[in-house]
Image (cartoon, rainbow, N blue to C red; front, side, top):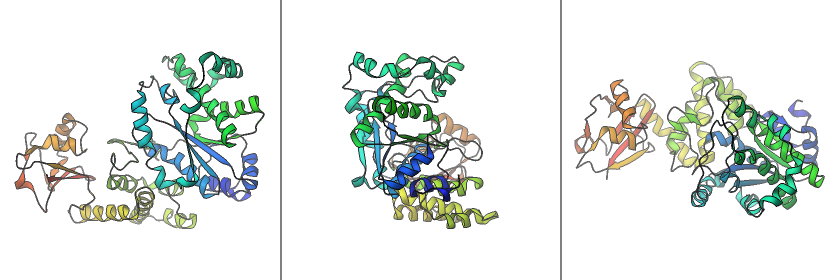
Length: 411
């Protein structure tokens, strides 16, 4: 259905901005969203200290929900992280200690304060209820509602088995735990909507069916397409590693650069998904051709960075990019490390510490390829040491390729 045929602001926005992939009953959801205030949730397992850009579309779903006058619920997977979601994986996730899970939870919550009004949002941890179940009680209460036949039909299980990769019984239980999450949230908050990526469809369906079977409640599921670039690259992953949302793991300048480097064919789609820019303005930017498409990319980078890191960070990142690329300068927002330049620091060490290379081996390869520059001069000497004599305008500028730069300052 066309977006303008929906009655609710929520569903109309989700459809016209490209979030819809599958929904259990889009007409029923639209009717409910038009007539009452819904609470809807998305779950985040606590497997790292920060979410990355691949999770941003799910946070944006919560933002759209809140913008439409509904209540977002952020479900922290304190319990399910102990099991590990098998979706899309060939191997089991590593087991994390309770201390690491708690630390990850604190880090993962950081970007939500910028993207949601947290005074009107609910944060809940599924460890609150799942940790209270005895094993036999859990099986008795919920095991009868799931058949092995059905569970084997879901992609998260079937694809793993088709590739002849082992799946532990622990992981096999994950979809039951996620389904119980939906039931608990419906009981506690009247939650009637679960949202997630397309790979979560099977898990979401289980929760929808469990709510109906156990409590006779009609609830809904909504999934987004898995976000990839026009060339097929997975969102949130780059050759240089994950694009983290937390500023202490990926600087605002690097975040800005990620969006600035968007492929031409993706600009309009990403503006709809990841910014609040009006659709009329997006249509204008999307229509730009030739070199002018760079204006649209800068608009995307500014809007996405300002939303997460603030207007000042976005402006500083743009100014730094102009100084770095147009004038050969060193703008203040470049990733920066400090070193005792009196004693000197090896170039290989500096490249790794600044995040321009993942290892000394990679740094050596980049030097051999002629991809490394020190103060805009190509450098190939693997034994090169950086010292006070290399400082220009208060810092040493390191570059790998045309788009990756960092500063080494005395310290």
